[in-house]
Image (cartoon, rainbow, N blue to C red; front, side):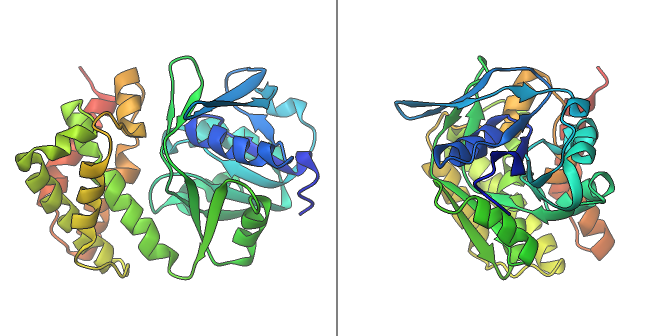
Length: 298
């Protein structure tokens, strides 16, 4: 891929994660095409006291592009895949790599039908970025991605080389993806309480979170992910050490009344558990509550 050619890279879904990736590329002279639902003339990101702007426009009509790209960073949520299908069709040629910046362990299953001409790469996103009401994004940590160690993934890694976003090519990507899923799954408790990270300082919530994380760990191991016994405690410690007002994308969606990614973050645990004969009693309670919070009725 010619990273000097700005048109060779596109970001689809310039929300929190997509804006952060666009900023990382723009800062080193690789400003990507910006593709989304809302027309804007720029993206803005707050990094502490610094305000960084990526020039637009944000394209909203796939039919107007008329060309494919070498690399797509797909940063839409699982609930928005259908809406992004036209972008994937318009941007993807036979050699296009689609790097899926999305939660869960089922990114390829959700995307392949819409990017059949391209080559899809799952990613684990490790940095906290939050969308603000005015459309800007706040970055509250260093940027890091984990990708599988494959030739297609190296296309994405090359594009981000020398940027603020560190890329790890992981030999055991499955374990990392499941570890991040455990973190995302327990964040579902924040949706049901309408509280932020400070809630994990309560002893009763900490006890529930650990029990749920251990249940998720049992499913992950049954799936073949090699994760240590200490992982649930480490994830809880991370939440407890976070700023008390730290949120999560699924909580932001709940507060805005948008559909939730409950199935790929939580439902997957109970679904895979049933298929593998692993009991998931906590999931079996949490998942219907999250589904109802997302989809109703009522």
